Length: 135
Image (cartoon, rainbow, N blue to C red):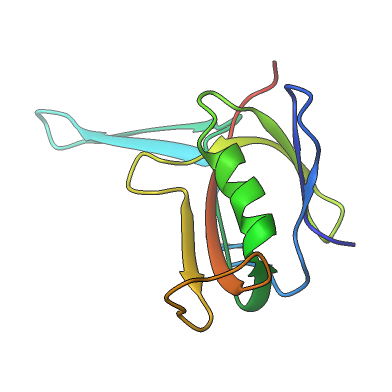
């Protein structure tokens, strides 16, 4: 099953080519923890479940996209406040936005740099999304 981003604002869904992988699939936790040390040296530990906020980082050295498709994805990435449904290749669904807090949400590089690329030139992509809560 391919990875698909479906904007909630009615724009067409975007399907990624094979080869894009969730880089940090198991490097997250849904538990927040706060540790405080009291004046007497005792530890106060608080934990709670997180409903959202997971950062999803996708990369794919073998995931090549045509420039025409990259332009569509870039347009989605430039839409302020865009909320999307993310369907992963293992049938998981997340409600997400592009994650721009620490740099660009999209990293797009040509496979072979050309001075004058055309619509059929290929690019590699990296993608950062953030899971958000329910509407």
